[in-house]
Length: 102
Image (cartoon, rainbow, N blue to C red; front, side):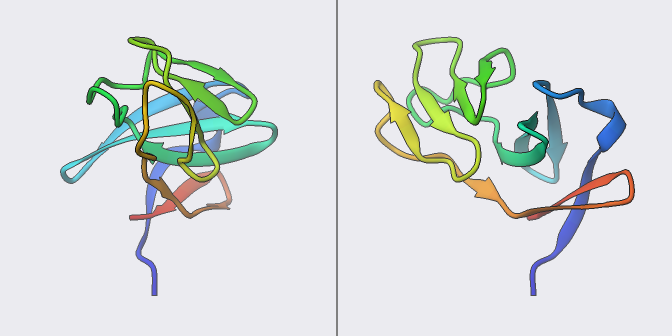
């Protein structure tokens, strides 16, 4: 059974917004787009830079350093120079809490 943990409140992240979160030893990024919340690793697989200052366009996030793009719904690579996907986490919303299975 997955261990869901609170990562944000729904009111903290406007539509189209993101929030970096540190949980234990993980750097996570909570994304709110197209009416849903998604949680991904906040590290580009190309050069280990953070995605926090990246550009969120629909379900795609672009790394601000070299332009690699990832799908926030599943972590898949959408554009080079990244070749390795990033991790995405199952999410559920209970009340005003965004919970992720970490």
